[in-house]
Image (cartoon, rainbow, N blue to C red; front, side, top):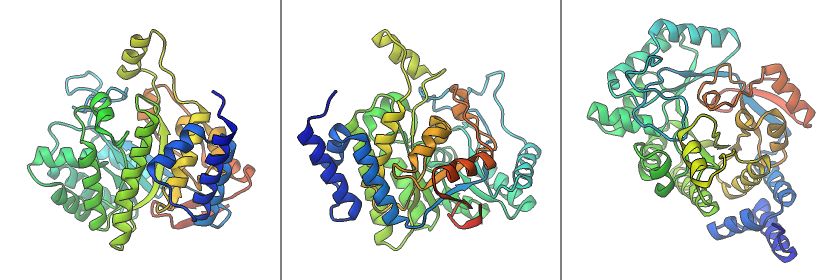
Amino acid sequence: MVTPLGSRQAAAALANSAATGALRLDPEQALFLLEHGDLLDLGTAASAMRRRLVPDNEVTFIVDRNVNYTNVCVSGCRFCAFYRSTDSADAYVLTREELAEKVAETIALDGTAILLQGGMHPDLTIEWYEGMLTDIKSDHPSIHVHGFGPPEIHHIAKVSGITTHDVLVRLRDAGLDSLPGGGAEILVDRVRGHVSPKKATSDQWLDVMRTAHQLDISTTATMMFGSIETLAERVEHLHRIREVQDEAVAAGHVGFRAFIPWSFQPGNTELARDEGAAVGEPMVAASGWDYLKTLAVSRLYLDSVRNIQASWVTQGGKVGQVALVFGSNDMGSTMIEENVVAAAGTHFMLARDELVRLIHDAGFTPVQRDTLYREVQRF
């Protein structure tokens, strides 16, 4: 569809005003940008805003490992190809020894953190999670544990018969260092009811994050787009993230350290099969064009979130590189191990040297960081 010249010019003016800080976008304006903004105009504005908020010509990344401690999950999300039921032949829960080996390998590869992600296991209570964290920190006290998205926290609370506040306090005291933004998908219950009906609601996800911020637990936020949501629902997701971030900042907390938008990968998923059958053609992943446009508007809208991460894991290294001039200032993780996206048939992997090269070639200075965005080394 060709955008009328007047609409394109109006969108460019809006984007530029947001980039300079002269205007804070409201939801209607953000939707107008998604519907009528020119891709390059939005990228130019988002890049200008990135330079204003993160003025150094640096792009950060982290060396860490995704550790999926179990693939057993009762959520049954229709977009996930990774989960298994308790009676599946390939269901697993990592042993303490297996987990220790993965952490040791991460440290040996100059990794500074592990990202603990599992399913909503029906039998694991808070005591099991406390034991896992205690073991990790006893063996490897230097490793940063970034783990358990809000749906996992909500599920642990339900299984254990305690509040999410108590879960967060007990996990923090056992060794949890920060909370990832997993399980957000789209924070609109119409969408969640269709793609992940057994998972925490939008309000429950946000309330876990509010509590984490009040406890000074560092967090990130994500958005999985390109499934069944409308553009207006993408904007609603961004707005709800910004509302919680504004609350955190007003109370003197860091809140969300970063925002990571990534595109739904339809391969091997129930959602793609059902939606494809309904329309008579295969469901396809969001295009690089759609990804970059959504990324740019995310940067322009989330003016109180400092870091925006490029999702090369779903888009590939080249689009990840282009994302650095569409508002991103971080390339995420080298992904020593990644299983969930890979289960959907997407297998982009990058060694640290390749990630450094991509950042250099895009005209930026590569800086390895830790989870809290502190410098580890520069290249």
